[in-house]
Image 1 (cartoon, rainbow, N blue to C red):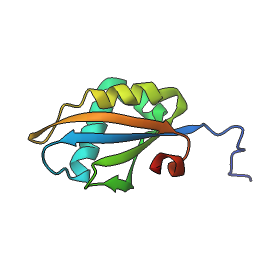
Image 2: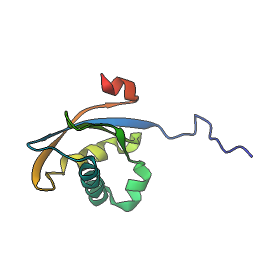
Image 3: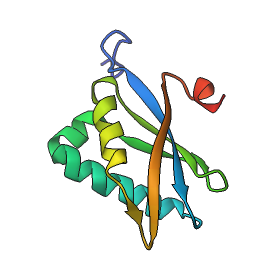
Image 4: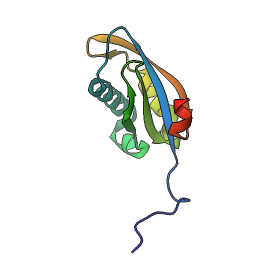
Length: 110
């Protein structure tokens, strides 16, 4: 029984690199909850599952307030719109700025 899928049948993914502009420091768990809530409101549960969204914890930089989100190719624009709808995390007002969309993490770090 072969459990692996062939590379031609796998769904392609993209990495959305974002930066948050805010006055105070932000905790990763608060940022993750805000992103998840916003995307669930914008996409709904069905499309959020199809978008295969992952917020990558190891690539969160608290000092520069930058992070990576992995998603499906078909839902990149929807994820960007969901990020733009976030205006507040906790008590601080924030602005999400999508820096770039890449196919690899290595090119996103440059």
